[in-house]
Image (tube, rainbow, N blue to C red; front, side, top):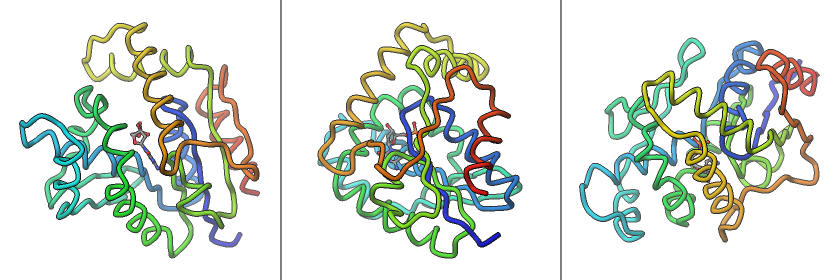
Length: 218
Ligand code: DC
């Protein structure tokens, strides 16, 4: 099989990263988690301990160095040489990441990096604007989603396993707000491209999702 470029987009908690990572492992491809890159910018912004404003975020992104290292099926995220893979998943980072991701200077810098990483092919990249904007010539485009109830339930379990005691209804409301912000922003909003295949994973387990993705790549 030719070295494919596979783009997976969808809302928060749809299971994109888990499915994309496992599919990449099966294909022996590199997995690129673009959400982690916006989270990395959000994490660095929070290190300033100042009120988070668009101006502060734009200042932070000017000289930030974000890199992803994909090793044995796992992605390590670095900001200015420091490994922050766990720290970018806190509720504080999640709380400001949509504000970070809507800013043009942030998107321009991250998208340039994403295109460079995908240039050699044999990649699975997930995010919100991969098929529509980052890699419009991708060989396979998938829009992965699930009901908001199921997505909130999955994220709640994930947070609980990490030791965060969060209320399910609050999490669902926060997720719906983030989806709205990501879908309605001016630059590269979350959309299902005309040429993307819809994969609704409501009621599916992770193995079924990975199998469905691999079948779409055949
Ligand atoms: O997938 P995630 O929850 O880690 O993404 C974090 C945020 O980054 C999410 O609110 C939307 C944004 N994002 C984006 O705007 N474009 C992408 N390609 C990936 C993520």
